[in-house]
Length: 390
Image (cartoon, rainbow, N blue to C red; front, side, top):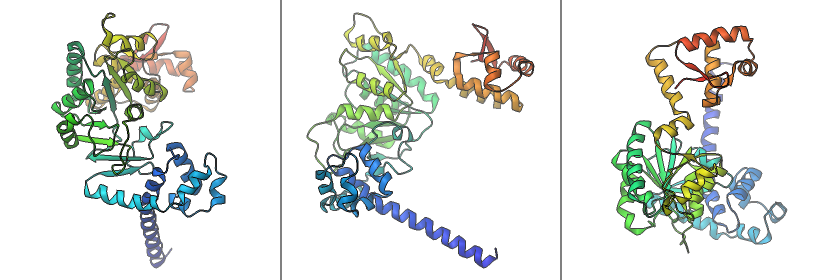
């Protein structure tokens, strides 16, 4: 390819990228308009866009293309061809720009990746603040609105220790435990996210307005509800799915039998995320929900940060840092063994099964295992198993 043709191709590629970006920016308006239509939730929103490629194509389609689509009835089709939704979307974008509210659609790269993978993620998110929602570690902490001294003291100590873990903390800005989560996160300079059950320009409860301003400075407020549409009621259970969905794990600090925090735990279990609960006195009503979660194996017991590190395999990350600091070098085969042991975490595995899993002869494997033991990286476990040494 001569230089002239190369420059022409490069220009065409750059022009194509520019056109795609412009199309995506333009399509955001149509995505917002689509999300405003009653009857189009997160699941149908994605199915329609996947079918038509762009939201704009949906509004430019005809009745026959839409009426046969699963779960799209005549009333929804009628609403799609109502011009008012596009006008409302334009006004919403203008309003958000004027009030420093950022808009993320499901198809934006900034959309929280963990949340994207739940069953019913919000099509649109509105937020205030400066934060990336795709941190390596994100945890959520929720609990009762009327915590005891026991719960408060444990939470204060836990968040103080979490400061060293370089993570984000998510909660719901409610009274009680949520309030303390945000306050202690700010005090320990941990970036934190408050998920609201109402539009971003309405703070609930109102008495937490000053706290919400501090959260924006070192984190973000986020909501799935349009700031130009009034809410008839606050949607706490729907908000709880976002709290659980954004996080790697959910911690419950005190909860009664019917606490809303238990709904967050249910969502976390549904999304296959780890749940931790602070155990309490069997006679204390504020601990009944947590104790029930632990007893029914729906939550791991939480007595200290070490419990979280063990279950979440955070020690492995520190082990990798030790390897780098001490300049411990591993050959290809040793790395292969270590990588597999990281996957199975603390469970351990027999030598025979390990050989089968990584396709290795036992004679070769035995010598490598001995070397890794000498390097103090693995250990023998009960049941003739081996595992990573923490």
